[in-house]
Amino acid sequence: MATESHTPAPHARPQRDGDAPLDKASADKASIVAALTAHAGLRLDNDERERLEEYVDTVWEMATRLRQVDTPGLEGLRSQMPLRAAYANRAGPGAPPPPAERTRGDHTRVPDALLDGGLTTLAHAVAGGDVTPSDVTHAVLERIERFDGAVRSYITVDREGARAAARALDAEIADGGPRSVLHGVPIGAKDSIPIAGMACTYNSPLMRDWVPKRDAEAIRRLRAAGAVMIGKHNLNEFGWSLPTEDDLAPPPRNPWFPAERSVGSTSGGGAAVAAGLALAAIGTDGGGSIRLPAGQHLLFGVKPGHDDVPRQGVGEGGVSEVSVLTRTAPDAAAVLAAMQIDVDAAGAEERLRREPAERAEAVLAPIGALRIGVPEGYLEDVGMEDDVASALAHVRRACAELGIELVGVPRAALDILHDAVRANFVVIAAEHFFDHEGPGADRSRYGESAGFYNLPGSCLSAADYLHALRVGGVARAAIDAVLGGVDMLLTPTSPVTRTSTARNPKTHRKGGNAAYTAPFNISGHPALSFPAGISAEGIPIGMQLVGRRGSEFEQLRVGHAVSSQLRLPAFPDMERVVARVHAGEVA
Picture (cartoon, one colour):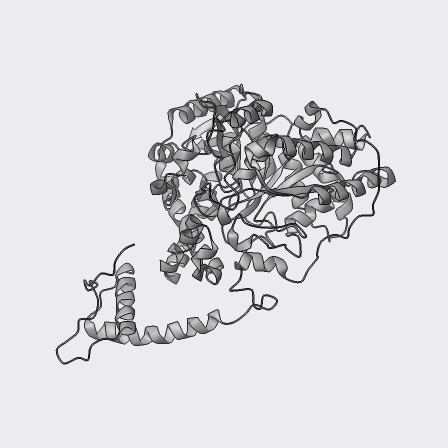
């Protein structure tokens, strides 16, 4: 532990002869003001510094009073849980009513090939009566039972709730047909996304016993589409820490390379979908937390444009979006389309029956003439491992075979991306501290890493935060200008392949692994990671497409077309993965 230094701060007011000794509070305030004015680049003489200290008393007093003002509906929660979690306890639609009990005999076996064929393929079998939602849910629960002890992708599996929801959906097939192409499809959600009646831990001791009273809006829309919410996926504690084996739930393993943990804060969702333990995973992406695990698990990961999917109940942050992970592009399109339909609006039921299926089908349509920009200067600055460079070269060739024109983007046009990464992480740090300011005062209520990760935002000023948002606007304008001349941008998803490299503490806190993803969080542009290759040691590699607002489905169409040109391996044999873990071949 650092010891208290007795060296005066560079700009601290010196004690003059004849002055009364400074008490500790005054000395602390003087040091704080000196540090903050130095950080702001101010040069104050002694008289100005003394006057500023008096003004600081006034503004601190006002700010302290504001902290004591409760948000209606959140009274008493501010010091107990993060504010984003408290919002899920506000008045609103609660858990759906328990479905009527229906019993049936043995389940029809769902062939592995059908489960692995994707949720849109499975939906045809459900709609045709070949299998029921209960059959599918039973099959996925069996897979979780057999394989997740090795993968560790789930924190909570809601077996009884999933079975009950599936039974109710069985009856609807006979009564009026499927609600949508997602009818009866088991989907998991990151354990930071509230689902009414299901524990929501954030993988934190602070929240281990919390059961939300209502669904996040995105979850409510998926349920309305007929999805079966099967459980909650593992994550870095609060999505903002370095995982350890001592966490509330130990980190998930990558089924492709189980000696390594899965990357990204939506790591459990990536591991679950890659292992076939969910047909899709819903997560959040504040700097790459969907796209990074998508890249490392050979998945499609869509971060929608800012607010294109509602964030109510998940968080009010400025850079994070509710996002989706799937094995195929049509599956991602179907899930995304369902989350974009307001189920309270007129005609919602008809839209659910039609639009997710139409969006999924459209992704398979041939692509037309396209110009895709490659920010060569930025790629050169950030760099990438050789295996990533090789995968990028294969993607370039695939684009040429498809008739896609790749054009270089002048370095000056997107040089702002460097500062956009910095801006994104300043916003995350500031908002995370605000979110955890109450409970975070007692760091013993968190894991060791997460408790510390709450703190850096306390040292940022309001000007720091607003400058970060300003730079986000500058980045948005610069990217929009470039997208005026090309249809999309192409970059790697990550410059590295191994999680252990990505989570090097010296580079992790600077967002090094998110250098290609984070700029498009602060800018608000939609972005897709699509499967692009595999490293020499067997870890998947993703490439990223970034487009104009509203282009998510077009990105999926292009990502599907390019990915289909590449030689990509089959998903891991989970029996072998389990055998390796049980044999002690992995940590």
